[in-house]
Length: 483
Ligand code: SF4
Image (tube, rainbow, N blue to C red; front, side, top):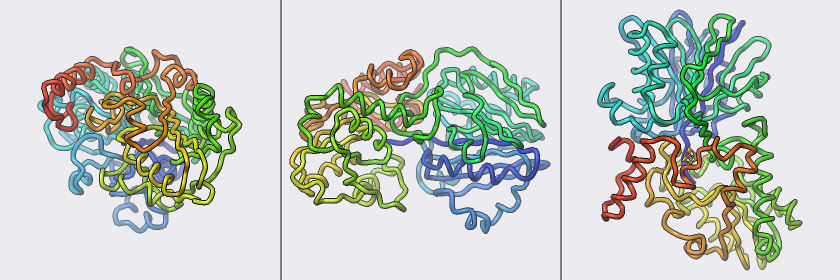
């Protein structure tokens, strides 16, 4: 499993306070980041509250010092997992979003989902303190001051950054804005409900506030909410669409909508594809099960297509909420033990089709296979909805090196042996893309094809492979070391 960047939210209400909308909109998206959360609200100036961990129940939040000051009609918020910057507690506190800075009488706050690939050179220019969001925030504020307008400042910023960025921001004058990189890597939609306009990473953040999804922000587009008016402008041309294909398999909630389809429907089709593509292996099995929650919908599709009974032989400990891949390495090793319980007598002596969303490092899958063996499974065949991951991600999913990716080092047969399974059956890329309903050329598939949509990412990938061939050890996130 691996890690994703963040969930973002922004809202302007006609009456009352923005904070309850921010709270519920982000709570619905807490799966996108567990390390910290935060809100920034405008009311004659920007006030910010940021804290580590999951968003707490509303009663607990209400008693936290500082939260009572966040009264105002417009605000932004964030739930974060670190894909840039360090992960010690002090760094996580410093990098929690929204980031807010003031300079020369102006101020701005931003909430980012994404990752900047050419971050090293931007750091040299804008200072080295903290995560990508600190640099972007500074770039934006200086850009706005020098260009004399919010739009021109954002345009300049968009032109200089390479990578994925879906950003919601708030100016010191109370203007709410949202924009997306010219490739559209990360989701960001907007919606309206009687009294409010909102931006959200996923549509579930609109649903929970009773709002209607109006559409997706387009690559290179800027939307601004000023007073009661909403404006949109194509600030820079879309270079090519490159929506992160992995959103469909893992990150998003099944009840979110991308490109007019529920993620649930896409995942169900993944399962249908796997059962049909590997019908011979499926026919060897007595039952199908899913391990993590994200694979439930695919397991259902697999069951429908194969006719195998879908056994609910694995159950989640409901209050163990961490997603294995949004965790540190040591915790990740044990999380599957703590998160999932197995109904042993339903497994004993059976040949089992296990549907899973992805294999990144292989550690959680290895633990799961071990537990099924201990429960007496006779055969274990893994059906993986996301195609084999053969390269790192430079756009905000924390799988930064070739060495950590089991799929970059081994064939499916070797992976099966390494994990203790009888077979590993990946969904082919063409089947995966077909199920999403999107065109191949509109998706980023860099980590499964090795071909990245942006030039610096391709250069970094090539450099990493050459260093490995020279026998050099990988040093973590290469985009933080060179560009
Ligand atoms: S490289 Fe993979 S995980 Fe990263 S943005 Fe592209 S598809 Fe998503």
